[in-house]
Image (cartoon, rainbow, N blue to C red; front, top):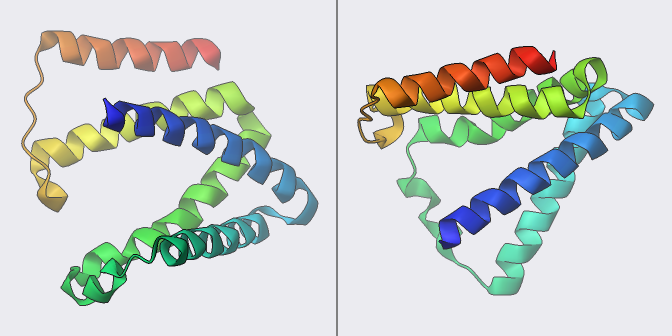
Amino acid sequence: MRGVIYACLGGAFLTLQGAANAAIGSSIGSWQAAALTQGTGFVAAFMIVWLLRDKSYKQLNKVKPVYLFGGAFAAFILFSNITAFHINGAALTVSAVLISQIAVTVMLEKSGIFGAYSLRLGTKQWAGLGLMGIGILCLA
């Protein structure tokens, strides 16, 4: 249950961040807003690690180098979201992001990339994904 709560919090904060970034991007530009957001995010995460006295960062050498690009992905995530918010508005952007996340997650789980388990999708699951896609088209 804790995982679901964290996922809901993450979704809520992602939406709030997208709206704030779009407002920042209107003033200073999308890439600049992405840089500012990543910078403040780094500071906030660093402060939390420091306050919790978490020393697990010392295990960084055990992380596969390819996974270290996750932070770089965030720059493109932020730029894409900021730009989409300006073009599409909040509802369509968030809906499209969710569908995209689900589609990529399904592909990752089906292929086993990044150690994800192999997912089996039945007719109901494919129908659900299709209906979500149709929902996006209805919002556009």
